[in-house]
Picture 1 (cartoon, rainbow over the protein chains, first blue to last red):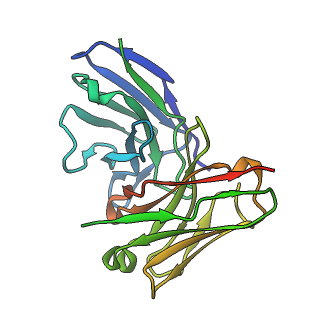
Picture 2 (cartoon, helix red, strand yellow; picture 1 turned 30 degrees about the horizontal axis):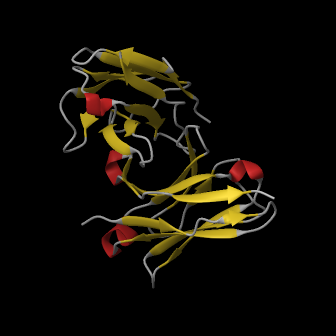
Length: 113
Length: 119
């Protein structure tokens, strides 16, 4: 199974400042046939199901604010919130969709400083 | 409107069985794989199982293999998760989610149903 590791486990950022979450996979999730990284990012607020933010490592889902961006390739990935808003307080998860089981990272809790 | 609705959560004793249902629109049912994901109290997300759009492929997490079975009912446009030999550690909120297809993601999630395994 591919192991997904996120860092940090939690971070506190001032409103309007940048938040950066890292995600590392134990093996590459780059699919050579289409040169896509099968890495997704989700946001989960308390009492709610997760929602998809980013797929293919860097493609924002329609309707997701452009302050959210994903980057990286192979085994190292980053989710950046360029200017943290109050409504961004949540837990963020990465997930590899390269091979079953589609494993998740342990989650990163983002709070306001 | 894309809809995914899960039901069937309950409180059950260890060793007993429970069946969860995920109702989806006909378009989703006919064209997309459906995944099950769970979240133990205060913990992170754990992928549980997937069934392909035509039912030909099914995959399970090691933690549930041999105890859980995923299936499809075309007459009701539902995907079910049959959970047997339940353990205390199966206690969680269970979500079903639509596969994003070529986008390889879980792009629509149900609200979740709570399964509590306790004596």
